[in-house]
Image 1 (cartoon, one colour):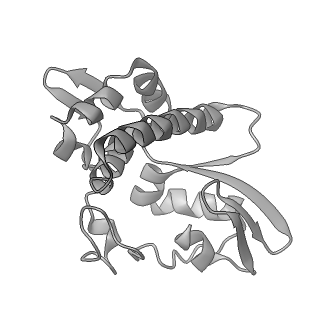
Image 2 (image 1 turned 90 degrees about the vertical axis):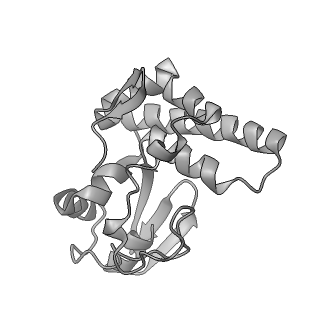
Length: 181
């Protein structure tokens, strides 16, 4: 979202940050930014260690359900949303250029290396060089965590991750194939 705002050619207003409803100039866009479930779940679980166990587990289940809804929406042929793959956005300047064109943004890639509020894993140590962060390898840190394993071994998540991110899971040892970048 910060990248979108920094590269907007006109005034940008975020109406609903969570659902990425934004106006750029006179145009309204509905965007879903979706990260692969394995790294998303690892980062979410890692960043919420401060929550009590019951609250954390309950919220995690809710967020996993929301991730599934967003993934299904990204696959829909007649969606009102513009799907943006965080993984492709992070790794490919060509992909960012295509996204910028869909949203009428500059292709200068301003703030692509900015770490605004800090990573739950790295803090702000990669600010100015965010592309060096291992955001597509967070799952490796959680491989033995039962909560993360629940996500990785969920058949629906596996199906969606394969369609959206071309990722597959093997269970012995638990490994995500196509990583790390």
